[in-house]
Length: 361
Length: 232
Image (cartoon, rainbow over all chains, first blue to last red; front, side):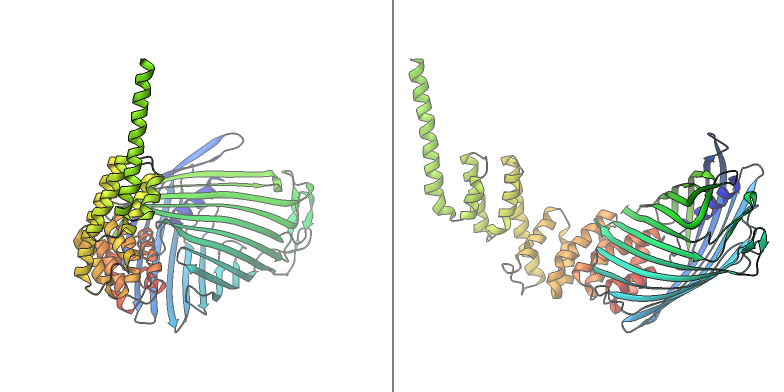
């Protein structure tokens, strides 16, 4: 449990690093913090950790036709747990945009990886690619777009590799500079080439797991009082899968165990009241309903009800800079997860204090 | 005796009041000849003497060729907020001075401007002067707005917002001048502030944003293009 949270921690500190920055720029970061989580029953535990990260980015405009940008980052963390835990994470990405009269094409590609992994989360490599075409780029008009997204999540030491391809069709519209909205419908396919699908209790079949995903998303966004950007996103995602779940304790196969509906409500707020301060807040709530999966008790017996999961969480970030080179930041993140499947209730809270230094070349 | 004295004093006070009213409505009205001003003053709780003084201020404004329509909103605001007379008087006098300065400034910048027709520009300039924005800064914004006076107000809002956000006067002015040089419409100027705040979250300094803005501004026709060229 502790190790899993530690991985989350490292991911969190990496994600908090800005994806784009000035060109060419290197940002070096160093931080420390504490992760608080439940330990056994009605007791708390915490781990102190140190983390460091480095980010290198470059961007430039392509004369009259668009832009390109390159981004790479590396982060590593070390937790004073027993035994000591460490983790690493790397990201490489490239993006380019081309304009054609009143439309534009954006292509991105990248690699996300963890070379060493940890004791629980294994090393992984995930190449990703995406192409998005905006048929109209004029903001005051409804802008239809079509995008294609794919990735291959490769875990050399597990059977949970995923190959994904998906299409998203939608519109964006910002009739006034201070407010806009977007609606999109996405459809995707996941292929799990090594994932076990059971033909009989305990007997794996040759069937390959394939999941079909469908997502409807709506968002509204705007600017309030010049300095506050806000966004509210509501999405409903459905998953149909041919896989099943084998419960060894009662020698039972739960057919189509991954079919589910997940709703997500989230908000993004970014506020910069002055050039020296930047604040971000991201709360979310995600209830999920499994359509066929039976909930079981901790000892493995069927409860006679379908699985329900609820996750709520968020993160808060504030940084201050005196000179746009040195940044002092404070971050906190929390999550609570509850499910009637084995009566799970997990949560964690994380506090992180750090500095970043931005170098321009 | 006591009752008689009271009666006499009461009667005198009543007479004085009647006299004042007669003076106010029958002597001052023809002089002022502005029913809007009278109607606003009627709603106030100021004394008759104070009302007379306010009318005097408006008369002085007329002499200085400042239309009363430019200062009436301030009087209305003061009355609705129940601002004390002395403070209101100072505000009105200051506003008239600022409008006189604003007229001189705008005519020096654009000799063809007809201020009575463009009273919103005149008033806006007066407000900026009242906020102690340096005259040379206002002159620079006005100079950059000559061919697009309809965006002057939005340009000054952009300037004030950037100052509030922490930019120095010269940098805020530079941003405003760049934007007025482009084809971006005034109602989208708020997007410029957003470029600075988003740049902040991406570790791009305002100074760097200004450099990039200078490089690309001549080819920019929409705020989205500018944002893309600067932030990505």
